[in-house]
Length: 142
Image 1 (tube, rainbow, N blue to C red):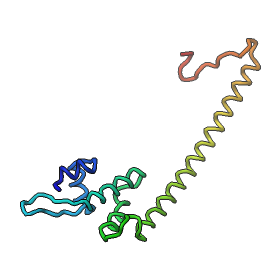
Image 2: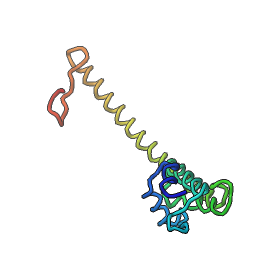
Image 3: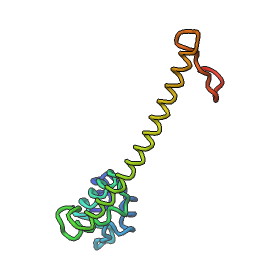
Image 4: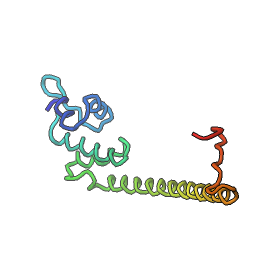
């Protein structure tokens, strides 16, 4: 199949395919008339790349999976190099989850502090429900 058909079937653009070709992820085969020529195996490579990118892998991280498929393996993640990339990605995700959990805890502490301060203001006010505190940045209500 030619580049336009492959792009349409893969849900991408011909420009993207040329980029992948330049990066060595997609083979650069030419037919007798000079047109790029692709087959179903190339479509599998593109689907593997797309799936991994949907999971947050950068393009270079997809290389071991592509090479695994090109070597004739039935799945791109059946080679040791692909498994190593999965492990590194999981370590990266675990670190990010830890960072997000720490940020979440800090935001929770800030919320608790703000709610406590608001309750103190309400308790001290003469009017039930307490006065609305003025926003230091806006200088008043909405």
